[in-house]
Amino acid sequence: MSLAELRDLFIVIFSLVAIGATLLLSILLLLLFLRVRSILNSGRETVRNVRDISSLVSGNIVKPLVGIASFLQGLRQALEIISGVVRRKEGKRSGREE
Image (cartoon, rainbow, N blue to C red; front, side, top):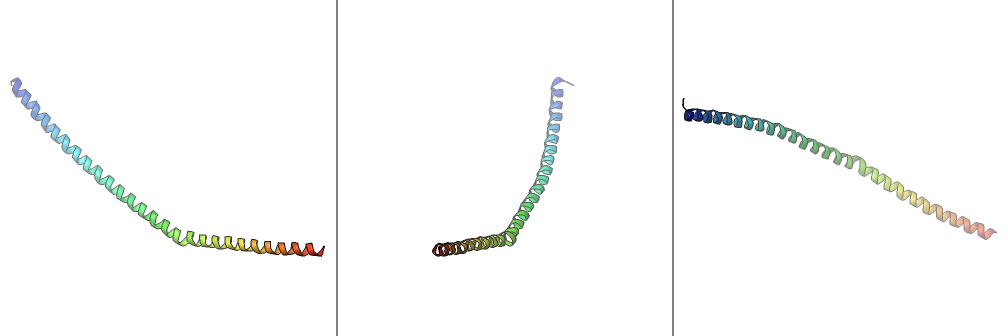
């Protein structure tokens, strides 16, 4: 076997190894892509569920609580105004009597 034939044999062997490695790497990348895609789809579904839950909580819990808090704040302010008016009237009455 001459040196040229040996060189050609190594070229063929290394070419076959390179083709095999490329196919193996392509298959591994495809499997990785499929796994990552399923994980990303699962993440998207989780985000969608969280968004639905937060909108449900916002609509059914937070909005009524804000309404109640606003009503109570208005009631408190009304009572403060009324008690302030009553205090002023009482102060005027006690001032006249003396």
